[in-house]
Image 1 (cartoon, helix red, strand yellow):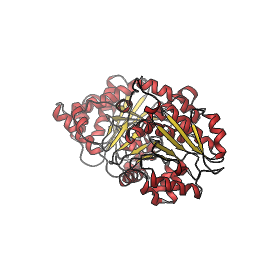
Image 2 (cartoon, helix red, strand yellow):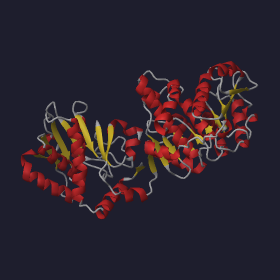
Image 3 (cartoon, one colour):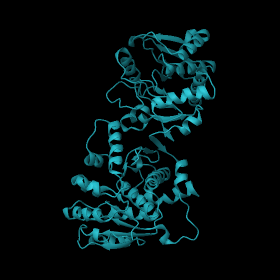
Image 4 (cartoon, helix red, strand yellow):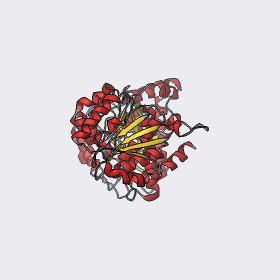
Length: 505
């Protein structure tokens, strides 16, 4: 799914109006009518609705919703915020219709003191400002935003298209923004919905299809995308019937150190579950028995050292389709030297995670030696150590993309909507996964999956998109079976088979 900018969404509206053709008022009625249907599906007529309307098209949506609910017998108060002298044409059109039929249900508000008294059953609908907002809300309107937020969580707050005060394409940190329980957004996710800093503002997002032109959507390029199951079906490669283990590649996993062999085991198990043909694990001597007993399907090569590895570069040769490095590796000086030698000799795309990333942050010049097309998988703190701090999530996203282009790498920034920046400047967000995956070893599992897919001749972009999606989807299946609280990283691995079966068989 493409994620369009606010300007592109306005273009999509205009294109639809011209090409369908449909009038702007009818398109508004179509969009707002679906929002009204959503509200009526979830709230009985015993609830009172207070719909706060600005004077633009978002306010027009609110007026349509008010009329629809009133026609269905709901108790509705349309609270019209009086500011400025201009209103959009569509707002004026629906204001006149509402005034003709339900004048007694309209309440004009010109300052915060006129805020209505809400009954216990009240539902607040925010239709003040939509995607057209391009600066922070100020003055008494900011006070109105704070007044509405004072009702949270006592009253359910539903935002239409976007919580008012939120900008689609820029940070609104420390500015007045409606805090919504639900956001009913038209046709597309907005970039703002995927930023961690806005998580408490947008609540649960519901995408409402409104029939915007498929020609515009198909032919208009977008920098940002939301990875979905449909995309995964175009990536997934079914296995040929006469395949053998050599068909699916031989991967080398460099992982583990004293006290951290669990990370190596989890990564190895996930790599094998992802379908790799052969897996060799380079581990310190202290981990030999652990690996052989925990995962007998993996071959083990031990380092000369007991507690950590310092000679893995000697193993990295052409027999390995790819290398995954980092889980539980440790960051000893000798390990860092071996990583430097590895990067100077092995030139295929690899997966770099955890302690290997920490070594790169200490020796940043090594970043330029990482083979093009490799996949880096930092969590936010690792990303900051690698590339520096930013003021907000939007700046971090720009930095993420810039570094992926500059280094010609795929950089996967872990989070609720994991962001995957590509060397061509595109950014994909992964929508699968849940808070139950915030547990030790989850990242090691992801490294194993990505390594296994790369070894099977998935292109790096395909591997990182499919791997992130499968990792999250397996986590969703685990949570559904075990609860978010009780699941562990092992449960993600054990549900990988179900993830493949549900999606591709």
